[in-house]
Length: 323
Length: 303
View 1 (cartoon, rainbow over the protein chains, first blue to last red):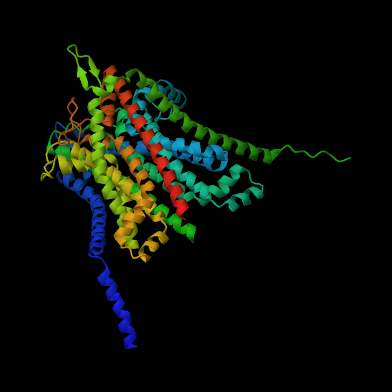
View 2 (view 1 turned 180 degrees about the vertical axis):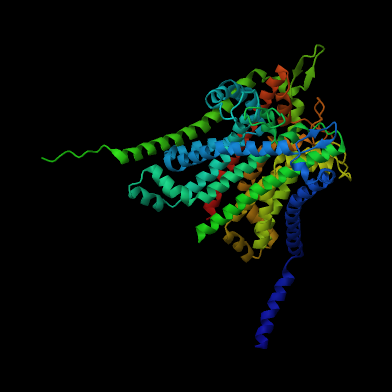
């Protein structure tokens, strides 16, 4: 036995000796280099959060948490508050989802259940292309093509028929409503691609069983397809919401940048991100810079929460599917 | 005589069929709407950009003559965008690919999941936040960083764009590396090849198509980003500059600032700049699709 273990051990050390120095250094170097890169990537996320907190500190100390619901933003008296921007962000993003979610689900259903296979690919890639259009180009288009249409056609029409609802007040050249439309255009491709994948993933035998029982296509969708991927669809919508909450450029271009925020959706408004995009060149006092960063911090917290919720839903949805 | 069977749906069945038809129509309309919006979007960029597309656009900077009339082109913005994206790519490609290699080749499962999670979080950050971060880190820094501490510069802008690109490159690279069949790695180890050799000569060459795809998409995305540049790279001169320690103009920022200007010539230039941007993004996404197809075919053959 001893002899066997001795002969067994010898080749191992032999092999170790024959391993080139170059390989030993190379393996170690690759490990260290890649590990360092991964560590830096993680550090970057922490660094961004830390940096924002640090730079917002003067404003946090000065205004405290009441900054969040204080509605003044006055560079003359050096008093700042986030209320208008916060409300604007929430209203535009949720409004955009109100438009984008049903449209995206419908496109997803069209691409997965309805369209002939030969046109699924091309239409799918066209919708994806919409996602690749930079926000500044959508904003430019918003100013010169969308705004005249909303101001002269859509808003007067809505005002005439639904004017008794305070949301549909006097039309205006730029405002919250076109911002919602622009955000909806930007979020639709994201939600659509998620929905489409989910609908395709529904097992065919379930769908066929529903059809076999005499259900119409819509009854099959409502009774089988939608319930079985509900969680995923909600997560997709929340991801779209996260994108809409953080969008700065296109919103700034069409929202009109007015405070205070009004009940009338057609009136100019503002959001956290658009206020940041607007004020990039006018940092007057140190406190105004800190307050701007504070706005950024609030925005970061909101989008992070939205993305976190989406993650949780996806996780739960995956567990459900497995179990 | 047999009574004819009525094949027409009546009553409840007819209502069900009608609801079905209505819903199907809605789905078709929704898909049509998306295509129409895309068509109008691209169409209006084309139509409005054409009058402004000439040679001056590409070789001259913006000018103002003695009467205050503006003219010239957007050459500084084109050069600036090239520079910004080049700096961003030079930072984010090595970082992203190395991170992906660590996650797919070295990391234990739990740590790998953590890194993926952090990259997703980074991807979810609003891009204007990245601008504020770089503003605090490199423009209004407490301690000057690498000598780029106290003013706007192309370095800072490129760095901001690299943060946008990093999660995109890292995540797509991870996905392709996971697609590389394990038996290739095992065959390599069985021949006595060391790990780093295997990664460099077997894993990466197999996955290169996917990595190029991810990188191209990330470049296209970064080229169109305005928000991260607002705080860090905007006070540019109207002359072409190749010095990265100075702030440079960029195509997206030019569109942004010209779109809000009151000057008709500026509007035309904004549309022309949008046209250049869209063409670039279209070309790069088609290229990336080509590389993706090729690498899929290649990986398919390996299996």
